[in-house]
Amino acid sequence: MDTNSIFALLLGLFVRLVLPLLVTALLVYGLRRLDLRWQRQAEEERSLLIRDEEPCWMEQGLPIEEIKTRVAASGKPCWQIHRLPNGYLREACLDCEVFLDAPTPALKQSKAHV
Image (cartoon, rainbow, N blue to C red):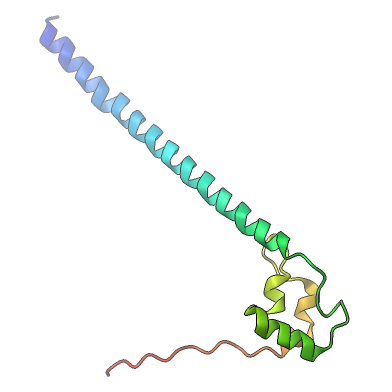
C-alpha cells in the first residue's frame, strides 16, 4: 500500500467514525451543562418557596378580610405563597374561601383589524 491510500483510509475512518463521535460527545457535554444550570435554577426557586413556608393564613385563624388585605399587599395570592415544594397547591387551598372567591384572570382582547 502506498501512503496516499493509507492517508485516504485514515481520513475516511476519521470522517465516518471519529468526527461523529466528537460531535455527539460535545452535544452531550453541552446538554449536561444546560441541565445542571436548570437544576440550579430550580433549587433556587425551591429555596424561595421554602423560605416563605409558614402556616396558612386561614389556619392561623385570620379573618377573610385580613387575608384579602395581605393578598393585596403582597401582590401574590396566598395559595401561590403556600405552594408545596413540588409546585402543587395544597389540598386545603382548594377548599378555601379566598381561593374559591378569587376572580378569574381575564384574557386581554387585542384590537386586530378585520
